[in-house]
Amino acid sequence: MSQEPPSLDIIKQQLRQGQKIEAIKTLREESGIGLKEAKEQVDAIQAKMIADGEVLPKASGCAGALILFAAGLGSFSAWMLT
Image 1 (cartoon, rainbow, N blue to C red):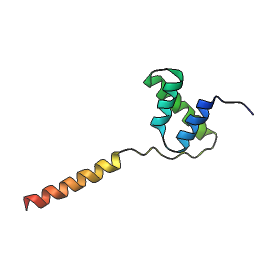
Image 2: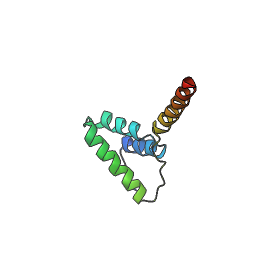
Image 3: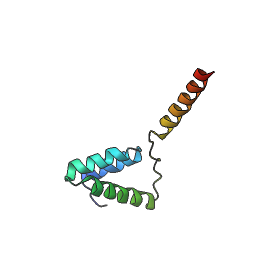
Image 4: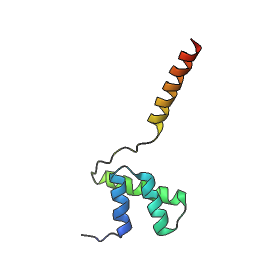
């Protein structure tokens, strides 16, 4: 059994919880690397986890909320025009 740095365990746990942005932040804080490099490394960690058979949640973003907001705004606008 290989020993992994504590931050890698934290990053993997965050990915298991669907918190990819938090994983990137954690890596940046621990290593001091830039955003692009941290994202690439987190993507590589995530890809390895998936290749090893882990099922990870899809990242939840704000797209759903924006769609609901746009639909609500459209309905409100239609109602105001009548």
